Length: 317
Image 1 (cartoon, rainbow, N blue to C red):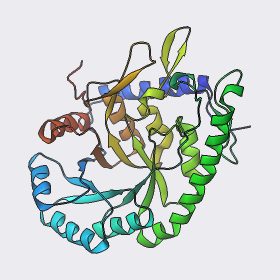
Image 2 (image 1 turned 60 degrees about the vertical axis):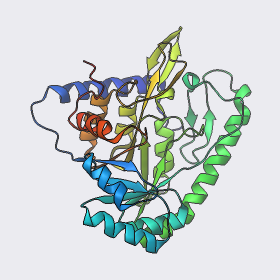
Image 3 (image 1 turned 180 degrees about the horizontal axis):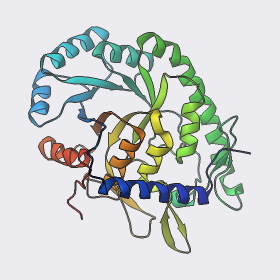
C-alpha cells in the first residue's frame, strides 16, 4: 500500500480547495495572515536595497557569501528597515551565510532526473512506496517504456535524502531551515511525492520551498482529449500545510489543450491567484513572497499588493 493520491483523490481535493477558496472570497473578514514582498538579490548593496524599498518591497533573498560579508549586508538592511530572509543554495556554506544575514531558510534543490524517455506532463499518474519514496508506477497502464526514468528517479530520491541528511546537523547549529524547492528537473512532479520527501526526515529543520509557477505544467491530466486540472498550486499549498517555509512567485500560461505553455508575467498566466491567497490563509502562512519573474519592481510591487489582498493581479474578473 502507498500514500499517493489517486486521480479521484486529486479531483476531490481540488474541488474541496476550490470550495474553500470561493467561501473565502465572499467572507467579509480580512485576511489574518501577513505576507511580505521580496525579490532575489544575490549581491546585496545599499543602493539596490534603497531602490527596492522605494518600490514598496520589504526584503530580499540573498546569495551565498562569506559570513563577514553577510553580516555587513545584514547591517545595511537593518539600517533601511529591510530583511534578508533567505538564501539560494550553497549547502553548509549557505546555511552559515543565512545565519549571518539573519535569515530563516536555505533554498535547497533536491534530486534531478535526466533519464529519457519521460512521461508528458499531462500523463503522470504516480504511485510510490511509503517506506522508500520509490516510484512503483509513473503512468497508468504499461510502464515498461519509462523503466529507465523510474529507476533514475528512485536513485535520485535516495541521493537527495542522503544529501539533506548531511546538512541537518548544520541546520540545527545555525537554526536555519533547509527548504526543499520544486524545480524543472523532472523530480517529484506531484505534491504528495514531494511532501513525502520533506516529511521523511522527521526534522523541524526540513521544510518546503514552494515555487508557485514551476509545476503548473504538471497541473492537468488530459482525458478524452480534454484537460482536467488535478493539482493546481493551491492544492500543493494545502497538501504541504504548515510545512511551507517560503514561496517563490512566478506565473505560467497553459495552452488551451493543456499540453504546452510558457512562463509569463505574474497575473497573465494560469495561476488562480485569489485561490492561492486563500490557500495561504487556510494553512496559516505568515511569511515571504519572493519574486522570480524578474518584472520591473514598481509594477511588480503593485501586483504583489493585489495578490496579498486576495485579488487577481492581472485585472481579470
